[in-house]
Image (cartoon, rainbow, N blue to C red; front, top):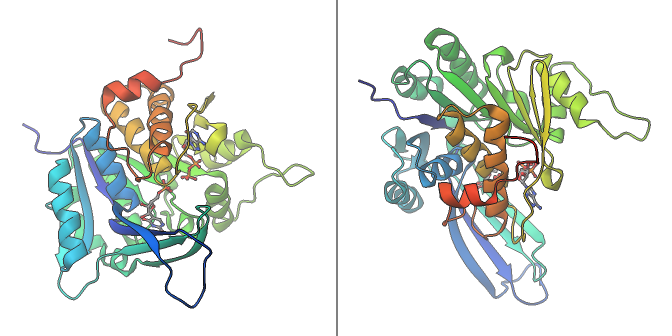
Length: 321
Ligand SMILES: Nc1ncnc2c1ncn2[C@@H]1O[C@H](COP(=O)(O)OP(=O)(O)O)[C@@H](O)[C@H]1O
Ligand SMILES: O=c1[nH]cc([C@@H]2O[C@H](COP(=O)(O)O)[C@@H](O)[C@H]2O)c(=O)[nH]1
């Protein structure tokens, strides 16, 4: 009998606070604003997407023993995410991120306290990893300390689970393990891929005008040993690369409100299909549908997300099954 959840998500859990100032912004002063709180962090967002799509998910993360941390844990319970491995640490502050926007929605200033992520140490992931069945999926975001990423790569080799990783940000991409061949699917964008490859001493071939061909980015990533790549191109869709296969999958048209969390929705819905045995290219079509649905809400995960809603928005080109 298996006790392993279908996807174990390891990485950040954040309380996001956003303010939108209604009138002209006055710096150095208090401005009247509309405020909202939501739960974020890439691994937490992926776990929420999975759960809303009917896939069992567990989160491995750290929060403080404080009011935001308790609210985040309660919300995981409401979502049905298995959170036994989210450690509330005494003396630690739950990761928080605040964004202040002007009347036009543009960011005026942001501030994030993500120190808690440093506490997701190799020792803290050891037990959750020991419970993952061979063949099950683990998702990790690149906010994890490098030492933890290395532990993950080693465990992937010895235990035979499958590992999906998201590079998250250009500053985080270089943290990926030296053994990139332990990554079964890498989710990234062009700038994060550039940062990762530069860190490994590999420059991206650019055209005369400095632009980069996305297919060349995918080839360069596959040459590092990564087993499959999903390169996201924002409104230009995705390139899915596997040895011998390179396929462009289209963006799903959307009425965009806010793109926060789009990448995490793409990862979550893709993994929800992969655990059911759907081939990667087809799974990414579901990922793009979930990402489009996420752009249509202000929250980082669309609260109405469901398998039926994703299926209703999937774009499959004519002639493709
Ligand atoms: N304007 C948009 N309309 C519809 N889907 C979008 C839009 N922008 C992004 N997406 C979807 O979200 C995915 C991730 O977007 P991207 O901006 O590449 O990610 P990240 O924010 O992680 O860099 C894209 O591959 C696409 O499917
Ligand atoms: O260094 C980080 N930046 C941003 C995030 C999180 O990333 C999410 C947005 O993801 P996306 O890139 O899909 O918009 C937000 O919820 C935010 O909390 C994070 O965990 N770590």
